[in-house]
Image 1: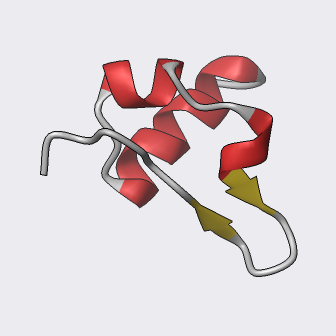
Image 2 (image 1 turned 45 degrees about the vertical axis):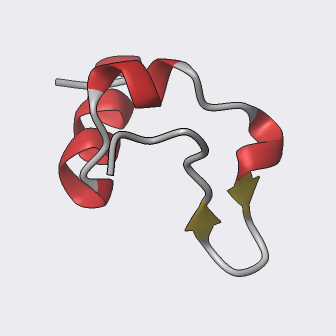
Length: 44
């Protein structure tokens, strides 16, 4: 895998995101300064 597919798979695997949560991510949900991803309206 390479490119976008590798990014999607590593985000799902590393962060524990579901596909729907990953597709709803916005740029402002990612904090590059502290290396955090904020997931709003998640299932858990």
